[in-house]
Image 1 (cartoon, helix red, strand yellow):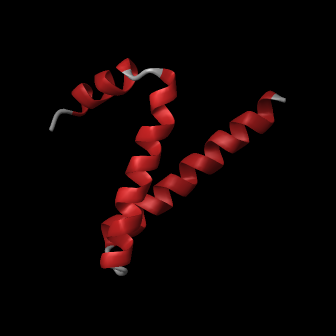
Image 2: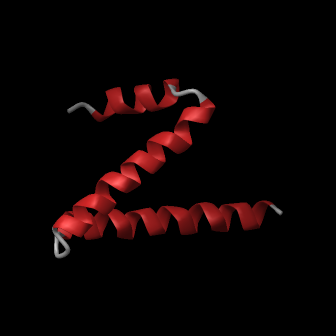
Length: 64
């Protein structure tokens, strides 16, 4: 997998498609968590997801 290709695909998304991709990614890992509750990779995904939410939230607060 080439992450540059993924960046390019992400950049080509229409604005209204971004929430759908994010929701799909979240539900994939949510389903995985329900099947494998102790999975380290899934726990790491949600840790990073929370970090990203916090960072974006902090940036938005600083812009106000």
